[in-house]
Length: 247
Image (cartoon, rainbow, N blue to C red; front, side, top):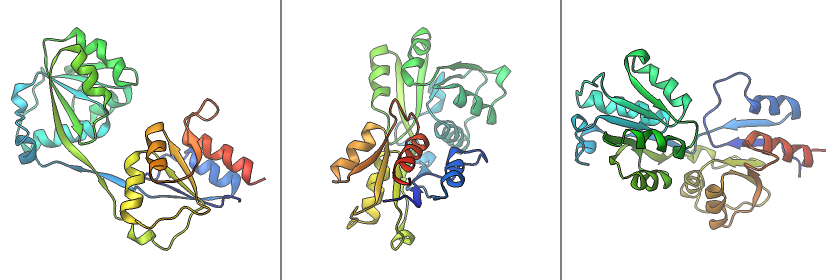
């Protein structure tokens, strides 16, 4: 069956040259974007209930743009003046670059990993005498506490934001040829919104093995898988599939 419509369970890309838009034009398919999950900040009073006092930390670990935004939001809500001496450990260059939204770069001590959290471990180990705060969500990547535990550093996890399932009730009567998912929570959101969802001829595209497992656990048939050696991104996986079925 040919693919004519795709729903991507993420916000619409803000860049004009997104590969999604190229696929739309090249293969004459319609791609809609709709986040199946969204992030909500945890109020400062709830962070305090986690027994977190920002004055007690000399360094903060930031693993995403959300962790940056919500660390500074909580600091503002707590009326905590972030000191110039605070050290920032950023998982990637993109996160460190985003940090400029809040701090003057040349006046701060910023340490940057390459991509994965494991890349940041040697830098954290080098400064093992610091008191680290991890600005995180309620769905923390399992490798993070494992790595920090192995480093034997003084660290505290703080839940500064939560991943929440979006209301998709307006999509009840809308059918798509392909649904693209990027996280297990996205799959959970589908079934929370539509408990009686049946796949039928809908193709399911997933990114990552944990998303794939969640789909299979819900008895979904996974038709498009990324990343793979031939298709390291979701857009490449979708394009390969469209090329095959839309001949």
